[in-house]
Image (cartoon, rainbow, N blue to C red; front, side, top):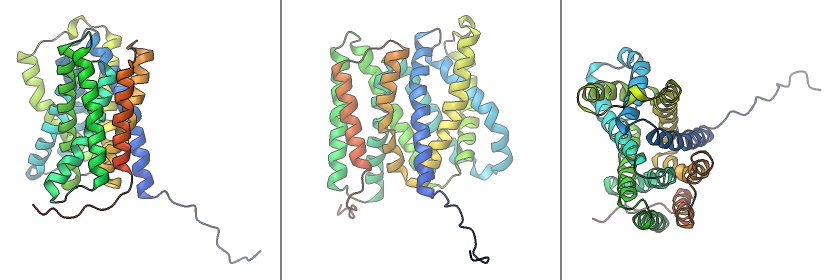
Length: 307
């Protein structure tokens, strides 16, 4: 044995692998978020109660760190982020949960985020989409349309369809948030704490003065569950991990990983919430997931737009 030989250094995890692992953790967090939020909306809470718990807990936890580390001159960017990744996303998605099943949230929110992200990137970057990406968007759109038709024809009727539209609006808000986080190169922890701070400051006065509330009639166990999941796991942990994955593997690739969420959410809702899966919903999950996965696969680089 050569006495001068150095022991091999353990291989370090690549930045791409770290981003992929963060994306998988987001899948688990958001699948649970869909189930817990639907459970809360079917219990004693209004959508505004769920939003208040989300912004109140995350705001209290994140404000001090944000105010200590971000100069006032940079606050406007964080305020903009809070409108999309905080208030817009949260209010749209919680309102949707009061009208449509959890499985629909998995399809329209988590399947809609990649759809919206790719479209926005294409429209704002001056690049035309590759054929593979266009095919992926078309497949995803077919899946979303399939579930939308199912909502109109189901016993839920127009209410579920309106919920689907609210979920799609939430997906658009989150896609804009993810793109802005990457474009402005904002550190994930600062971004999430800034969103929490501004969302709390903007939302809570309006909630206390004007919005309907049912917190007083809810049990402490239900309140504790929603506070922990909405304010910590969903608002801070999942959002931070998504922002981290966004910066490590890119906005499009990070959003495409969310293709796993619809299936996990639907299966969990079937067991936990007793929301049975129809064949139409199963077909929509498969179609949307196939489109998202196709969009995530390596393909030819898009060329500059001639427009």
